[in-house]
Length: 360
Image (tube, rainbow, N blue to C red; front, side, top):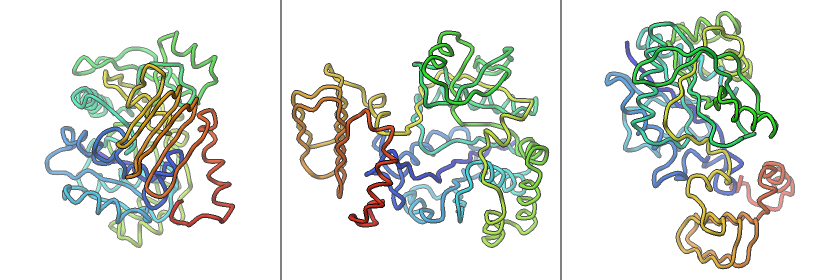
């Protein structure tokens, strides 16, 4: 049975503004390594993708050409362009239908283009174990991550009975999915040891997930099958997105499905959702600062995030709990306590009409 990776790469990543914007979203930037996040994702998947298949990248129409141009060294990929974003459920339904039509009942590994994962070998072992569960038991498998901190920004999975799996990878029945908790519950989840972070990465057979769509979102299933009958022409895909609902795979399918399992790999994982995540990627110094980039001078700063992604010289002196971010055409200086509200401030910046559209 073939294995086909599907990479969801449609978001903009506004919490990484001013670096990330609609014309150049975060997956096209080097954040966790010297390569772009999308390149890192493709390299991570090359050991689990069957030789006679192509990884599928599902992205927005506005950036599809930039995605293609950024992958000049990767000719063995397929790019699916979404005319409008409808969240993850329609994208996954479309990917599953294309895979089934092209490769038969293949295994589908769904990942995001904005995760930092290492080492690659540990991810490969977990992906192979998840694929075996998906093949033999027809399960929907989610990658769960053992919490390293009481994180309130992630969803959680409560695990049930252990399952046997290959590669000595821990696997469990899933009791339930839990929305992002408050601080007290996040601490409790971590202490109890039966909860995992929900990584948003999944493995299943194309037929299995399509059957779940038929049961839980029948209208979406019918619509994607109509696109399949029209051989997924550009017009058929556009029509599908025009009529389908906007829904997440978590709420639309995973929270309702019965045969759900989790694998807990030993790899390090981070959902790079905002500038704050760079402290986990690049570490901190003795004064709790994270400093990254060339041409940076830092003196007498504490608890600050100083990132230079521009050709300018960036000097930071005496900052306390400040995020200072420089890119080619903009500088962001913000108290770190305000970073969770960056999207709100960005909306106000846009509404002021004082700045060029290319910044957004």
